[in-house]
Length: 309
Image 1: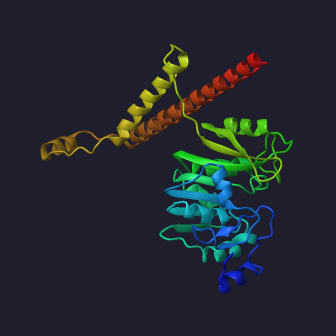
Image 2: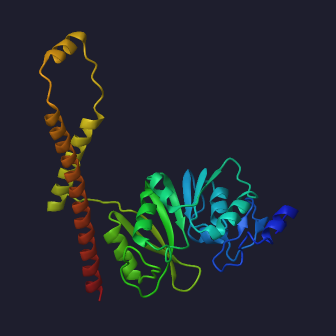
Image 3: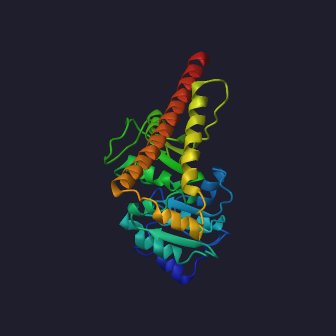
């Protein structure tokens, strides 16, 4: 391991929980020759998933001692956010990160789930390999994590499968069937798809790649084509209202405007409410269109499965 005195003392201290079966070793530099102990090698884990180089802002959910956080730094991430609500690992994570050669990269530590809501659309890649089955509110937490992804972002997630069906909002443990997990993503995380990419570290574990669906509408005269085009056209017109550049008024125009009768407050409130209802209606139409596309996709897959049999 080639550790220095302080590093060796920390590795043998009660703060560092390296004996867990799911723990990753922590490479202190890019060479991999200096590392704090752990059961699994993060280099091998990410190589197997073809995650060779990362860039920009990334995140690791429930990183425990921080093995995957260190590896994301060594693979080029400029900024890695670690969300670890389990207090058991707080001291170990902070102590381990003090020995990691971070170069110009930054590590941000978040001890609470709630902070995920403040970082929407910011991450190019998120890793979640632990604690989904026991996090207590799988629907809420997964939706919050997915909301953190950029439009082209990817969530790599390791799931422990069992024989459980669809989850309720709050539960102590959820080990879903494979089919139920995929249905859960399609139904409760609208606009995302889950693809199985590898087996996990133990039996019954599967690693998924979850990302926003690329919706391709083919112009074949189908009603969905017209509906999608109509929604996009209305949405563009609505957004153009908010994005119009400010108009600079001349002194004469301002005098005429000042002399004109002003709108009453009730009328202004009514117009604002009308604009809000219009925007809300367009969002609901978008959701309905996405749901219909997802249903068409499932029906097509079922037909292909029946025909192949």
